[in-house]
Image (cartoon, rainbow, N blue to C red; front, side, top):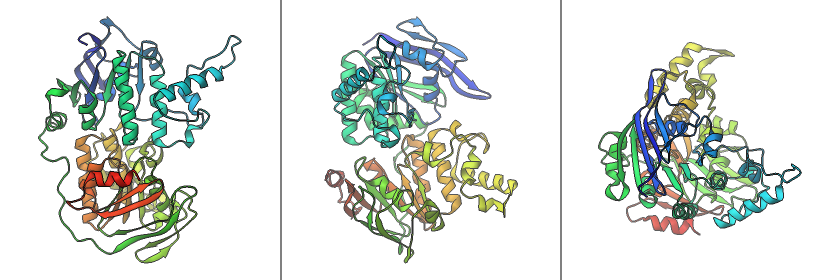
Length: 496
């Protein structure tokens, strides 16, 4: 365990005038599970991209088993025994799960013909070994976010690598799936495989990791044995200041009249007779396991998914919601779970992402008012505290927390009265989470209403006025969030 299978020494990387990494060291022992921690923008992803050859370091060296090594691309890193499970899934939606699992390494027989039978047997055998059922012929485009994540994980694990880097691997998994993944990680560790584990869920670090390294603002802060530290201390090292509370205190304010009533909502083959009411100034939490129907409610109310039947009332008036345009006209907004593919235009600028669905606010007729667009985008960036070099900066060049703020800015600029937030803090560090919570509190203080879906029960408990619990497309209960309510009560309903 004491031998360093990986040493990254004095790694420095700058992008223009911005120093992303400043003389960073990372030493990982063979056969350990080593956590890499830090806020979004701390340099974790940049360091790993240097390891896998996406970026070249300006200074520093990489040693694998004591041998200086340079990988020029991901393929060379894979050949060198290093595989990656990325936070942003890198799957080809138009291909099957089997084709994605073997992407770039298809097997062929002696005649040079692709050996589908052999690959299918290997895929099924591996899935069985991790106790996860999946049809190898199913298109990835048909999978849930959690299922896509399992394909990504399976692809990395099937490479028989010596070092596996996992970037937020549990972000979309249910508690049962996380338990299975942790069992797999422990098996890999017992086989001598080294895991570099990146996660913003600090409770996971204490469950699964041996040691950790904290980065802040592109610099080394500390390397510690997990058993010798505490969660508050780690948070302080990550954010650079003491944080007495993980969740900000919320000012008491009265809950108003109903703003949204949903009656007898059915969707094809899934949601079954959902009924609920949302009140002005309320945060209504939706809990449940992945696949329970939480996101399906969000998409149905926003008009993104077809419904079989169901009635909607907004501000006491019966309305029709059959499209996202209907929902937007009724002042309903959705921040979806998948911000990369559904919630934003990742290749466009920060400004365009804020104004793209609000062009009527920065136009006169069909003529776009560029000055107003710039002015309004700057105002929203300032109000939400988005950290970006410029409003003209591409969204994909921002950290995850700042990307999420921009997605929120789009709907705040739209002035939506009802905002549906599906996993609003997924993949975001503790400091950025705190700022998102403050923004949600400010929304409801101004009379907006929020439906918040989250896989993290502490988040649901801390923010929600009432909690709905879903199970297999059915609404199990809707309860007031009070001091006597316990997480095990919610989990009982979530498990049916």
